[in-house]
Image (cartoon, rainbow, N blue to C red; front, top):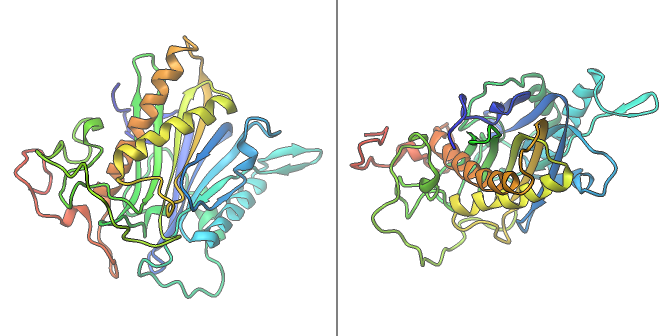
Length: 338
């Protein structure tokens, strides 16, 4: 397994990602789309999710493909970002055909960033316009860190953000992850620069520090946020041909990546969710081995994307938390802050 050329979810050919944000609001939207509809599944493991059209992704439901997925800040207000994306898709002639009418299928998920220090005293909901802009700006190369839906994200101790990573398997299958890290839990270990995701790091992509000599495996964490103030929302993508049932299973297994990278995760106070999508471009050679390896790779890739989000976060006026880059440097030779 090796990272793809961009180390972004768009290493899965045909996918594009766009961001839009309001720095005063300290919030934003990230959209994943493609030139053609793609199959999607979803699995929710957090206790406080906020979603749109996720029921439609169940294997027994009628629609077999979606036009875009939306990750947004703004709590329930942020679900309106899907409206802006759907409007843009409709104007472009995209959507599920029902007679002469086309209905864009745009599932979405939100995280709570209403108490992050930004100015939330808006007159008109800003998220539809942010969603439309993010969809219009979607491209194969995009930034990570304090951008898009990760603009105002926080964790239990450090500023969160938007992360992405990819992996190319020995079979030639590509898997990628895109994630907004706004977790109740911690991505770093015991306040240090070391990440819980360190065992799955590739090419020193988030500092190359490895694990510390000792770490608090038996700690009893105290919540740093309250009900509704946290959520990690993610998309895993592959070019392997999977139907909706296979994608639902992939989404379930990919949640392992959250548990590897965020401690604790899947709490009653988080709305943790993973979408899984397939472009269907590559047939699997072995219906037993390939899904097995793909699921493991999806979890590893999501763990890496989570650490990369926190690693890439940068300070901004009015922040309520410091960034990983502000932590004191260690004596590890690959530490970029040294």
